[in-house]
Amino acid sequence: MAKFRWSKSLHSQIESVFATLKGFGEKRAAATGNIRSFGTWNAYRSEAHRFTKFLASKGITDLREVDKVQQVAKMYLAKRLGVARQKGHSYQTQQTRACMFSALARGFNSFFEQRAMPLRLDFTESRREYLALSREYLLHRQEYVDGTRAYPDPERLVAAIRDEKHALQAALQFQSGMRTEGVGAPAGKVRNPLTLGNLRGYGTDPVTKKTVGIVATKEKGGKWTSHFLPQATYVRLEAYLKAHGSLESKYQDYRKAIITAAKITGQHAPGKATHGLKTAFAKHRYAQCVKHGLSHEQAMQQTAWELSHNRWDITLLYTRG
Image 1 (tube, rainbow, N blue to C red):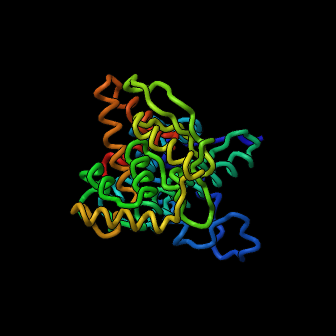
Image 2 (image 1 turned 60 degrees about the vertical axis):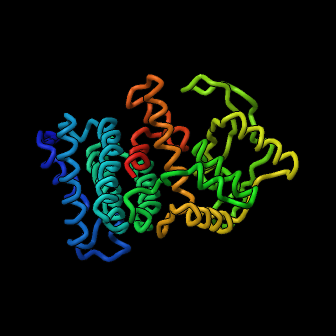
């Protein structure tokens, strides 16, 4: 049996992996995962070499350190998205980057399967979250014309909303970090009303140690998230639910109410709408965490959880914009 050879250089390892993906000129049916276009193959390969530089900067010298490579990939994608936001890159560029990671995993896994070695890379979760955030931030770049997506005075904006239902939804977003689907105004046709069944009573805020109302909502792919509300807002929400049965509205109606209030209070910018409240929450919550003794990483993680994200570095996408 021929001796297995694997280069010590990350860049040479990338070349070996991408060599397995060449399918230039093959018919679609015969390609079976190979890349048929040289231009596409070369674009992915170039992006992969950029990624290896980032790996090297984190002390990784071998793609076979699969767990570390997958963890660093999350950091790399968060960094690239931050740069894309600042420089106004297109969503299509991020799609290419995400596809590269799919190709890298496919080529790496194929390389080692051919040698009967149980090594596998999987970037599926990182890619999906990266693309979702890219769609959210880069397809609506006009929301950053004033340099931030957060409203500078969210309390005044919420107070300016005349409709009781929409005002309560806005207060929940700003004070607890809920998404629009969490406050009963999901985009699309799916209903997700907030009901008494979402209320979890009173408990202790894990950061401030004060007594707060706890609301559990199903957001982002069916994930349940616990949100912490000031007692006054919790009482207000409970009273509303007892009187009306549920809190829900059409997304477009809620969005329009936010934009109208933003105009009234002089905080309107083209494209800026409901997410400005969630971003304002993230900035405030992170600062509150630090004030109460949490480290930078702990503050980022706690804020991420309350934003319905698992990864702490996702918080950067809110606090930087």
